[in-house]
Length: 449
Image 1 (spheres, rainbow, N blue to C red):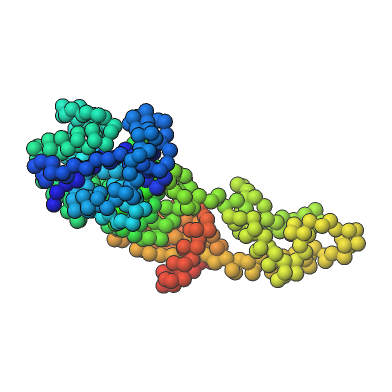
Image 2: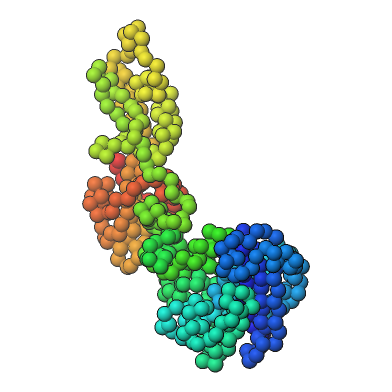
């Protein structure tokens, strides 16, 4: 199979919202160039001034040029039978593949990146950008930032690499089992290779070591690799891939532990590229207090740091629904629960039940609520032999989790709290724990409230 060495000029930085203004393809048989195709392309959209100042291509130059649709058939014949090579190949490939798709063609060929190849053949250079790499290797670039000039320089670079033992790396990179051609430009394959095929939470870092994405996995190696198997053309995905420079991870014993830890880390770190689970933390609680007439009052209020809530809610509406249900079921007074803000008339005050009678209704309502707010522990295997993973639900809310010796007796909530790490409860974590408990009743140990 031959190599198609490609360079393009575009109207912008991501394929789904921009067009190609010029393309140059040199077909190379591993020894010499056997074919060359090059043309300006009318992108059918404006060319920004900063692009013109960089490439010299303006709208007047492309006005009479063919559209991509008009060259698609010829270009597809050239590319579909060859290995696609470019400097930062995923950029060029994403544009070409997207344009082909718009024209009714599906490009699916092997790719090879001369940036990644350059790092293997000539390790330790200060920079692997096309200009700096060619400068380090004393390769002259003519007509810089034009498709023809940059593609021709990439041809010279590729030939120089072949002359310096690149073939062994090329063969390895093109193997079906290798993820090399799909990985982000700044992420080394050895980083992926070191990931375990076990549950855990993984982190993507940028060049400044800032965490930009957090995810959870049943199989860390497989899940991390899956991020890079598709060349998505949208701006967000393109920026995401360009920013990833490092992967780190925390091993977990089970998927459920990974779910809990991922949710906690997203809320702690607020990573740039995580969209889900960025809802606010629990903000409301159900509280009780006694007023100056001796009536026990129930109220939904913002969560208090130094006051224990009877139950906690992420949303005000969630708490109001629960309280209205208690009012209806136990015949409580909506005005004494701050659900109805209508003021009492003097006559209504006189007709109220005595505090002792009304407070007995409150007691029955809270007892019923407590019965419906279970306390239990989910017990599962730990990471190493001799330990177990414990997740504590206290009165309906997630309290925390941790590893304990298998011989540790799980008998009381208070004793567990001395050995587990507390976590912030939220709907996502709680719902996953309850779903797991329902599917695995044999892993539940019921506790007194």
